[in-house]
Every structure is written in structure tokens, then in C-alpha cells.
Image (tube, rainbow, N blue to C red; front, side, top):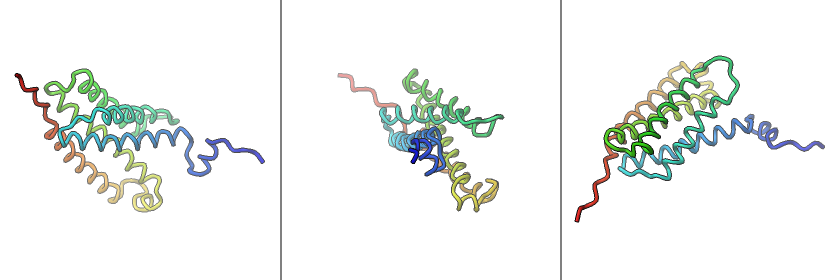
Length: 176
């Protein structure tokens, strides 16, 4: 009896390669961390540790998205490029400009936008992989898909506005 490799076992069980599984897990961690960070922004808190996890995993998600075989530029690649540009602004705003002046709003809006792009792709993938959703929207042009994406967009526009509004500059220390 021949022993199966871990990758082959994973592929047989889930239909995913190790690379795909890693990409999905990193993406889900990024989405979770991004939701925590967005909640912190709405509440006016930086949450530095969560921010680091969010930024690293969301960059890794976009970068690993280019590791799948492709012949032509796909919409997923365009979303990945946009996400990396937005994340570059988020990184500059947070770690280089230290949230000074307008960079605070750029950071808050950019973090929520990067999170939205990750969730947008998650919804696309769910409609491509889950049988019930495939039946509901086989070409992803049906009302079920369009309405779902519009609801997500509306929720993230609201979240982005709340994050920008809630993420005020920290009060200066009282001078004695």
C-alpha cells in the first residue's frame, strides 16, 4: 500500500492544493483581522497588533493570488493590483506618515477598501464553488449574485464612512 503525500491527501479530501489552501487560509485570517481593525477604527482605536496581522495577511492574499496559473490578465488580477496599491497607501499612512493629518483618513478609508476587495473576491469564490450558489447564479450575472455584491458594497461604504468619522486623532497629552 502506497502512502499518500499530505498535498495529495488534501487534494483528494478538499479538491485543493496546498498552495490554494494556504491562500484561502491567509485570506480568511486577513478578512477576520480586517473586520477587527475596521471595528477598532469605528470605535476610534488603532489596534496595532491586529493592524499588523491584517496588513501582512491581506498583502499575502493579493500576492499569492498571482501564484495561480494564468495565461491572460483576469479580473481577479485587476482586483489584486488595486488591492496592492491601496495597501501601499495604507502602509505609508500608518507606518511612514504615522497617521498625521490627512493620512489618518487615507489609512481608515484604505483599510476598509482593502478589506472590501478581499470580501468581494470571497463572495465571487463562494458563488463559484458552493453548489447552492452556483445554481442561484451560474454565470454570476444573475440577480442573486448582483444583489449580494450590491449589499456588500453598501455595507462597506457605510463601514468606511463610519471608520473615517470614528477614527479621530488621539488627544494630545495634557501639558503640565
